[in-house]
Length: 134
Image (tube, rainbow, N blue to C red; front, side, top):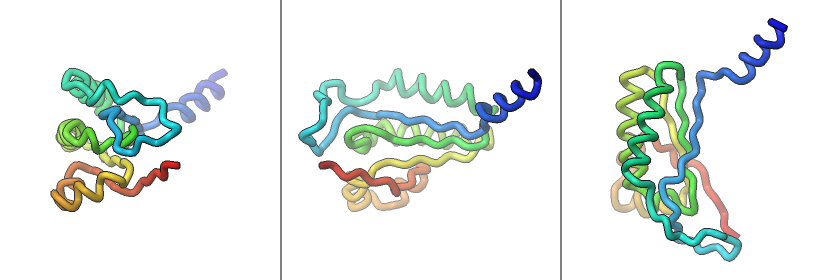
């Protein structure tokens, strides 16, 4: 029984915490197969604060936090990504965990053209994931 409990702990207890966050339902693709109606817009400030509070509650027990910014086009919610990322970076410094994140490449091209790479890098964003709509 104790061996099984230890195996369960080792399998499911991890110091790596991965969140997938949808900062907005907005998208600039309008793929023919998409079911979204794009009505809800961006994540509310209340939800953003609740999310960062949740991360702070987990912070003392993690070594790595990875956030995947998900959605039709996550960077349509750039203000949400910026707000949450800045708070998470503060928490990572306070609690000593490593923070990284990723998103799709489509809108990064425009963001980089107007604001440059440093605005993304200092928020822990690694623009290496791409999606190919049909």
